[in-house]
Image (cartoon, rainbow, N blue to C red; front, side, top):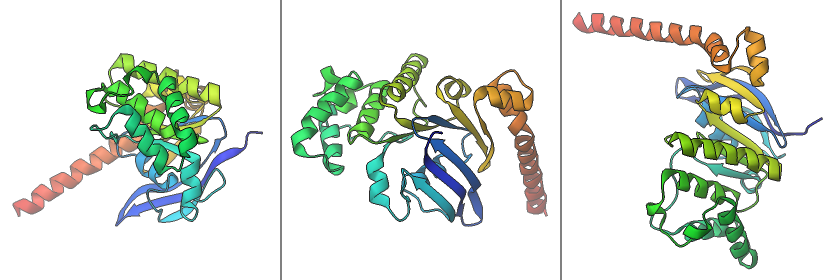
Length: 265
């Protein structure tokens, strides 16, 4: 039986009266590629921030590599790598300098940092651009460098928040292939968020469909299709979420009409 390297139970995050993550529970096995699939605002990024020590929950329990992200932040940070949704590289530094700075930040000893950086640049096929400023890189090259940076301290888990958003189709396909190869070659656990059906279907072992802060269903693509009597992940997703979305849209319109009436009075 595969050991669960991530365990989440009854996790809740509120911002004032708004519940961004609404009592979710799930596990991720060691060496698994696990995907959160949902629209913008579903609670995907908020969840990742809580799992990676960047945000404190309102309530719930979380274990990442056996440690709590809330009371054992340093141990969790040593166990994980993160590629954020928004670019976070220093454009005025070279590729090598970005990795060197990150290695120092994570306490990688100087005696091995240079070798580790060379390995990472080769891994993401950027060794020939090591001394070029990041501001000269394409979007795909920056993503690959961000992945290299996230791996510099040899983490057990790699978190990828919308890793291919804003990339052209060719670069997106390359990164999907690369993520899969990374998982195979290093048996690394990968947790990614996405709103691309094809991305979740092609690379994830299991998918959690999340909407309005709630996990609606978890399973392989085929399991989700079978449970909904549909022939594709997209159809399964729509069947599981469309009613709630339509109701939310309808209630929003009703509220808007009510505001107009009140304003008119």
